Image 1 (tube, rainbow, N blue to C red):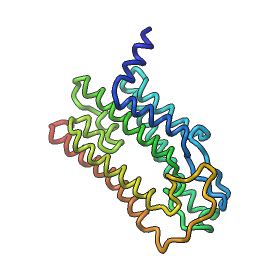
Image 2 (image 1 turned 90 degrees about the horizontal axis):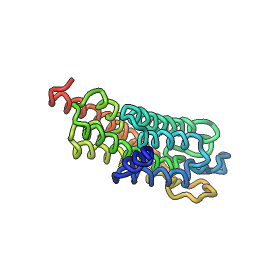
Image 3 (image 1 turned 90 degrees about the vertical axis):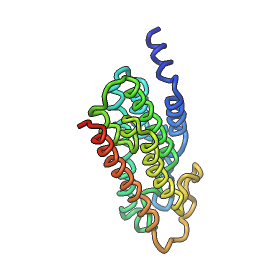
Image 4 (image 1 turned 180 degrees about the horizontal axis):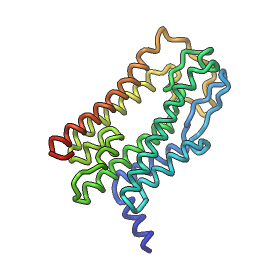
Length: 233
């Protein structure tokens, strides 16, 4: 009975419900884009071990009874998502890809990754709210939450500033995907039938990816400044 009550309370807030919806979408949508010319087959979220690890970490952030464990699970999910995106950026530099087309990592990141990333943001909102509801002063958890752009500021009751950084990072990543001639968010399940005509430059995609990284770093700087202004170490 206690477990059922805890489960209901964990899913009582809109962020938790949105996180669950994002997790479900991540499992049933494409995690990687299939490109037959390079021998890459499409992979759905439920077929990807890394996607399952992200899902388990997000469920831990939502369901574990200890807020410190929620935070650790949240960070684990973020590290897995970043590591996979970084791996995609490296993968397209290998000869199998680079000999066929001027790929950028965002070209092969499917919609499931973005759904899982949305789940991360909703889970972070839930964890930050739990800290705020505890009425405890902001401590080291602020820096852990700041790893998710904008959520350290949410822990400090500066939600609008935090939301600004979240939107900037998310928009830069989405625009990098939209800029891709492969259109990874809209590829059919059977993969890309043929490669598009080469672009003169892939500069805009790289600029947007660097912008996302810069915005994420600036959100941490903003969190540091906000915490100092509150007189907290």
